[in-house]
Image (cartoon, rainbow, N blue to C red; front, side):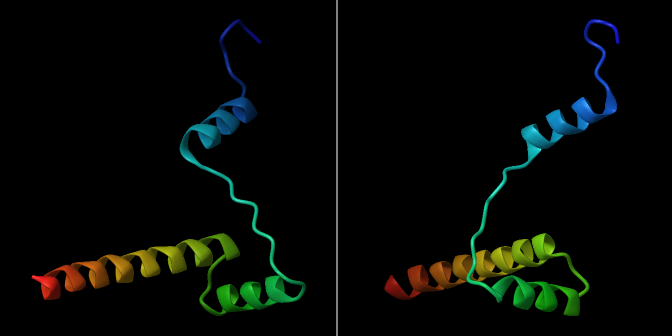
Length: 73
């Protein structure tokens, strides 16, 4: 390999480090299977399922906060 030529694995690892963060999630025994089943029922991976839940919750939170601000005026 030449000086600054990167192999495919190095490139992918660097890309991942620059664009993603890792979260280690510990759940009670049996919960992983429940989450896996819920995700599979929606045709999603566990990762995609959890991200989808966070996005939906975040959107609901934002909407609720905007509504609360309007009612306080």
